[in-house]
Length: 132
Ligand code: 5GP
Image (tube, rainbow, N blue to C red; front, top):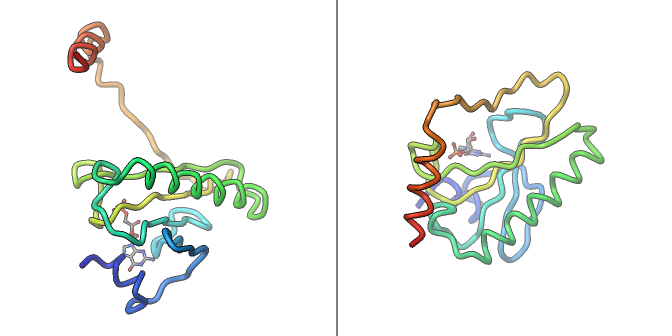
């Protein structure tokens, strides 16, 4: 049982933002920015890699709703909607969750990628062949 299952059953408190039969949204205990929210499915699955497609679709529609709300009502200028799958990608809780991180001019957050200088043609070829 993960910490998020305990949040769902109420044995660990959380600052709830939204709840329905399928999902719970609550404030991340570590606020990357004001309003940083986690959305989790009540029926646990490990990550986006194991979730059913309709759960992935619905959780992202909910993320969009919250994101638009934060832009309109918290004066956020943008948002990052991200999910981490597996430890290599930074996942620390094995219960699928989507981060909604409102962005503000002054927040100084950086989500940066680094150019790995890979050969684009060979990457493209490898991926196309993997679909065959
Ligand atoms: P991950 O790194 O797995 O994508 O994100 C897990 C998130 O869960 C982290 O941002 C972390 O701050 C948050 N978190 C971990 N434990 C708790 C908790 O007990 N309550 C809340 N509200 N958030 C938590």
